[in-house]
Length: 496
Image 1 (cartoon, rainbow, N blue to C red):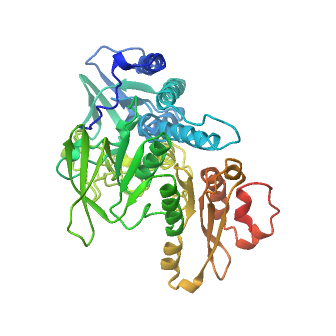
Image 2 (tube, rainbow, N blue to C red):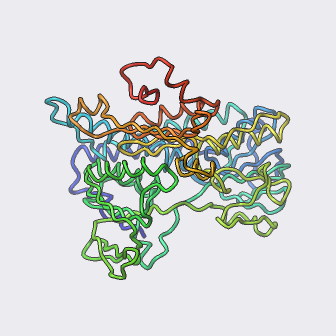
Image 3 (cartoon, one colour):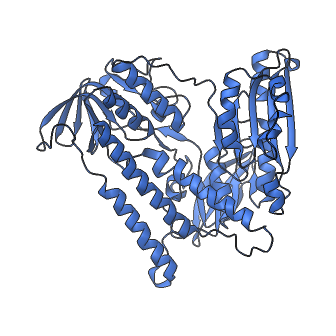
């Protein structure tokens, strides 16, 4: 169990503001729960145990499932969407939305704390969580309303695929021409003795107060984001990184610059650290590890530990194995290019299959599949150039090839040219910070075509979203250099 004794403050010690925050939080949760009702827009309510028919049954109301269900319904299909948890999946409830809002709070507080004679600048976690829960409740209502407008039937409960054309939800049986699995992924358990003592990223958004200190185990974007955000809210954070650097899938120079920035903000980084054991000791957690090439066991003690070592596809308990549906080496559902499993009537999308586990990818897959199944041949999204971001402080945005990937593809280092610029933004200057931002372009040395763009700055995610179109359309370095920039902006650093 996650050691979250620090999370719910004792009622006797709660301040008036904490009591008010708790009440508002509970109200927000009730608002979202009240929307979690079965809705049968077309055919009226049925008696429990009745069998119904549908063209399309979607299991999982996350980003991919909702996108597929809505698109199919607008194309005239009879759609049943099954969900056992809160609508919106990981993105709304335990991922993108709460993370981004908490990141905003931390970033704004960091800027304000250095501005002129401002004496505040410290974001309050309990107040931030109230705002996060309110936004989640709003999105639950909005999602439910959009599904109703599209004509999607929302059914609550645990689903089992009992046949190639049949889904069981409690006592109800649904016969379907097509079935879609969109059940997403869940945090990977820490596979060491005492690993159950570590919290996961899912737990963080339920915390009502923060631990004084935290050990984050992991090196990917979830680990980095949580370490960065929580440190800005006043938690003393140490990271145990198994690899030689952070963010193995991102460009090495940007990742190194981020590590320096995190260290400057007080996050202690331990690289090449393999965790071996977690122990509970005197109300704290001891995380034992050894560094590569050294058998000596070292220990970091903190009030809590957070394991962010990856996410695993979540489809156990659906009965798919009995139908002969295969599993990949990574644990995902095996699908072909058409997102179809070995059972022709059953498809899968999003985090439950191999590939890029990102909200926009799942949504694009869901819409494309619905188009393909129900009469419209839409263009397949370009998954070769998907912009990605890490919402830390400072943030990272990236699209296209890293320098190492470009060299590997070209065969020779001299065929690849890079342009790197470091600067301090006016935002940081105004806040009294010398934190440097960074832009890196990876260019084909012969043609001048930009193969990848990587940026470290709080504006990076927004800029890379737009710049992805330019990279996809073959923008060249000369195009950037001959375009008159908008000044003063962070984005102008891309143009030379």
